[in-house]
Length: 531
Ligand code: HEM
Image (cartoon, rainbow, N blue to C red):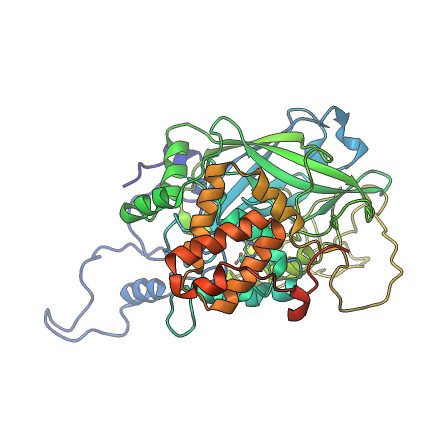
């Protein structure tokens, strides 16, 4: 049992409740007997007018909301982000006018949810899976959500493929068990995933806990200055004093044998004992153009921006210092979205980013409800003034009291809400291209996967090969063959070692596997690499 959170009294949500300890029902009626339903005689049938019992049992029947379709299992905490007021050695206003970054020492409250991705709300936290790293900044200009993962790249670059990818990763629709053959069936027909698979099956695929992992925005965003000029940016969270720690598969298996909740417990207990985890926020900056000199597209989320060319520049520090008082109201109902940006921050044309942005608020209107932004954890900590009206579970208008309450529209001459003044020049990118359905031309699906493989220490390579062999050993030969061809195109040593490992555990497939003939991806409707 976890210790009670000593910060409970400080939570503003508690101040809304008078501190009475007398039990009532939801209507405020005192409940003097919470042990017995009302019946006709002590042994008799129950009655339908039993309001308190019926309210209690029917509310219980509705305790669950649909779990997140991905990232269902997570832990959350409150904290603060403190700006450095500069980016590297330069004034940050040179690149962005976002207010939260401008002054050194400026503090912005945050709420963070850290999660696993594929499995359900009660699954083990030791599974090989990316980890979600979602941060809600309650800024003076409204909320900014930086919805990232621990790994810095993603499996795919086009949002059209996301539902298929998740179906392949989640349990089989017949057996309800995750199946590596389905997983690698999809991956082996998605060569752009080779880089992500290289990270995921290495020790980086199982962070030791939520505190000791990195975070990344993954997608390419933009920063916009006072003149409306933009640069491309990527965001990265680096753990400070707690450091980075990953697990070998055997360590994860040992923990999983005795504890399915180790990461949630670790985060909660660290915060409860005052050992507050801290991360530094770094950005990488590129001029806002196509960068033909690079062998990858800056808008491709399957790629890293090399640190030597695009250094990490620190812009601030985040500390998590307060546990939630109630998991459901704060963590389960928290709603983050990649479309939630503030003035001075913008989207890039990264297609994955554009596709995912619709998905978040859409699912949240279904998962939490159309008025999910009125729930305290999602509500901005500044004034909200909209003409939105009605919808299930709306419990207040968004219009301030000094506004004519009859006017829920704009424009109006009768005292309604007014448009806000502009903060700076609009960013107005110019487009002149045909509307097409085409992949980006510069895909280079295997180059960085090879670089990453070569950068791994020998023990990391061994762990990667062993994990891949274990996952691929029961897959059909053509799936295995395609995967080996991808690993070989990334680095011949990589492909050879996976093939040899598989030949050892599955000698019957040895003839096919020890000679990893490169399957040309064009044969499967994809081009392999290069321009
Ligand atoms: C959660 C969709 C890509 C990180 C979700 C949810 C959806 C979704 C529907 C559930 C949200 C909720 O119920 O509140 C998509 C789509 C993607 C995509 C359609 C691509 C086309 C990504 C990428 C990242 C990411 C690239 C990492 C950069 C997360 C995180 C959460 C999440 C961290 C959990 C947020 C939380 O803690 O509540 N995603 N996603 N997703 N996604 Fe994505």
